[in-house]
Image (cartoon, rainbow, N blue to C red; front, side, top):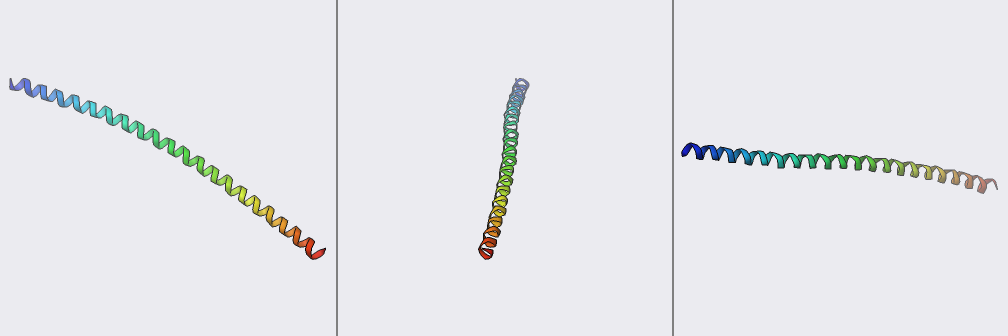
Length: 77
């Protein structure tokens, strides 16, 4: 009777361990998927920031040119 109970106990532990491994594997898969999505979002944000920097630089150049033209017209006009 004792051997049967030990065998049954080992079977239960084995079953619990395998079910725990399945749950952990699913969690890891979810975490990896989430990390991949975050990496994509960070790349998109960086691209948007670079576009914004380019737009600001363009506006600064236009403003500088407008200032030069107005200054030239004011002192030469």
